[in-house]
Image: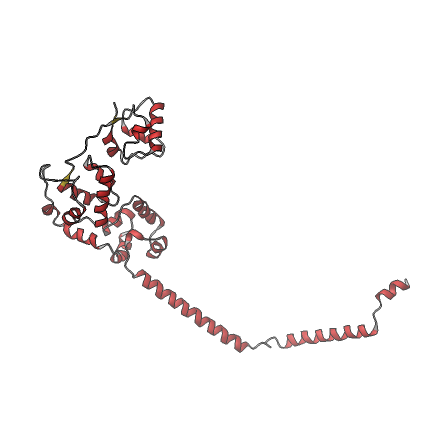
Length: 290
């Protein structure tokens, strides 16, 4: 027992040190209790006031930027999610716009924007003054009032040949933008010449009203002779000769025809997974069923 007791004994010097430490801690706690505001509160208030001023200035700057952003003219064909949000458009309205643009179609008027997106008249009245369309769109609009007199109906003999018309003629006579005119010529070259006016539909960015203007003055006159392919008997190699078919498409068509013992209507190709009937009227120009 004596050895255990000696183990817990503390020397007098340590006892005095512990007592002094306890007294200091006690006095420190009393000081904190009596003087809780020992930190300079006035300095804190000054710092908080400066911080609040900085926050207010940042808020004002954000508001100014937001106002200036809303007032900036823009092309409605390139509205982003954030831009649409600031304009007050719903996600459904934006989705309609994106789906329309995904098909390489362009909005060229306020009325067309409303028809595509379905925005309310009240919102349209607010945002439509900010719409900014390309200069060539404005020129085309200015010529719409004289469309009938400028592009009178012509007979086949009176029309120019769509297979020999130049890019400059399309720009000068019809008013087609230069990059669209170049696409028409490039597409014609890829096909080795148009065999039907319908093939103008495949030119990306060429709108229906522009296509109608072209066809009012031009049509396919000189065209190469092609041997139309019997789709029910054609090989994969023969199907690949159709400008609209690649190897995989031709292979899918061949397999589908063999599985169904032939087809009696080109629209049956729409049953093939991934096959679009959008161009079926142009595809049929190169094919026969029997």
